[in-house]
Image 1: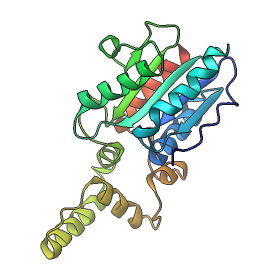
Image 2 (image 1 turned 90 degrees about the vertical axis):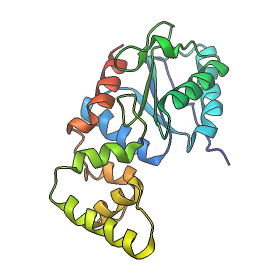
Image 3 (image 1 turned 90 degrees about the horizontal axis):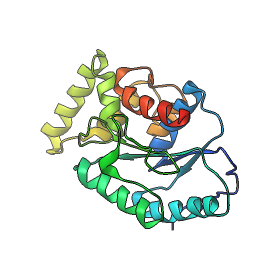
Length: 211
């Protein structure tokens, strides 16, 4: 079942951010606090399959006369950055938004229409990956990574399973005695959002909010 997107809170000047899931929602939330973005609204669509419905709801408010300040989308690139950007672009256009993926600036923002729209696909840099890719980049220089690598090696040797980025991130959180989800971990400040790993999404959100 698609999540219920309550757009009744949207008013003139609302800055809207769409999160692919709870992990992205947690990251967006702490960045909004850090960047002191006002009038921000976060909608967790719980998967790209629900994106169009959310966009139609948000677009409906705009058609009703509510003038939004900006729209930001944060999703995983997964295995193919270009394919994911193309899919999100199609959803935006299908929902009636003016958007041109070929006209994004260096921060991933399209300013060619009435509504500035920013798209960030983790881990950034037009690379494949996910939000956990950024997290592993953040913690990559920590000594605890040696322990995590030992766990990865042990699991592979005994089961033949290669732990992916989600599993490695979960292992790191367990070393902090915090076996929680990524979104909650961001909210509990278990990750350092001032780390360079998050510089691209910070730049996108900062510029978009100021548009």
